[in-house]
Amino acid sequence: MGQRCAIHNLALAPDGSCVLCRRTSSLPASVQRTFPAPDEPTGRLRRIAPALALGILALCAVGALLPRLEPSARIVTEGATDGERAPASDRVVAPSAALEGTLSTKNRSERSGSFFIPDGTALPLLVALHGSGGSGAGILAAFKASAARRKFAIVAPDCGFIPEAGTYTWYVARERDDPSPDSEHIDRTIDEVLSLARGRIAQSGWLAVGHSGGASSAPYLATHDWRFTAFGVLHGGAFPAAFGPLRPHGWFSTGQADPARTPAHVAEQAEQAARAIGTSLVENHVFDGGHDLLAEEIDGVVRFWLGDALERPAGR
Image 1 (cartoon, rainbow, N blue to C red):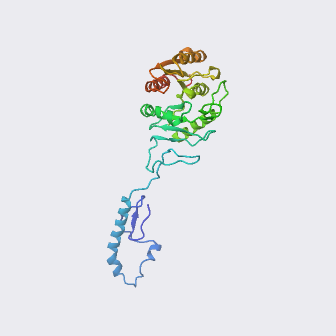
Image 2: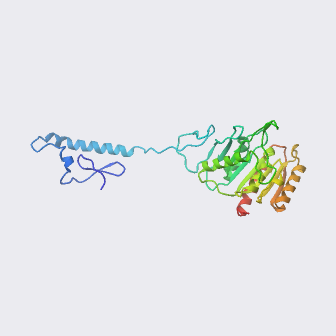
Image 3: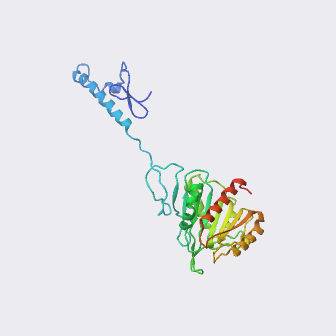
């Protein structure tokens, strides 16, 4: 049986609330010693006993109605540093709640990156590489609405400063199996997001996409890592000599009025990539606009990726 109150034989329920039970014929010795001896007066005790029992019942009832305290879950937000996570709030968060913020891992220039994980499970992952002079937060913002609607996670690393270029941009791998100095940082940001997601991200079916100066790193990543089924080169180029052994599907696109990456230039890049990984695996698209990321372009590469990933096995 459960525990019992020492006074008036009240049974204690498992949650601590009390229930009044039938009086037993005898009391334990430890309880008997608290009562007066037979020759002592007991009238006062008999008078106060009913009131005392009612008081105990009232206290137990109040305790049962009090809300139970649960540990508060925390959302990772911007401002987090190594070994520390900044709370967005102390409210209880469901395991599948959306998460967004700044990553804690840092690159050679002490920059980190941004991430977004929508609500849901088995989420495919988009690794987004921003253009020269940009940031992970910027390219994440361009894809966030689509990610929330189509249910995929985003990790967007920051590049470092390259003195010879005089700006923040990416070191690019130009040979097969020869990662650039930025590759380690990209890998660490992916690992951090996988840890933050706690099993909610799918193990394969990922997309590596890059814009402008970050574009050529996307096919290198996707052709060396089996978890990717596709890559996207947006207003940029590629180095087929650096492609790995894998054969993901490839997307190339630019703006009709892009002065830096003209349609003719991007078409040539797409043709070279197609010869390296298979002509049937590469698409090339031109949209109205300039060098900036275009809404139709973002929607197009996401549709290309998710539709393609659903139709083909991850192992290619």
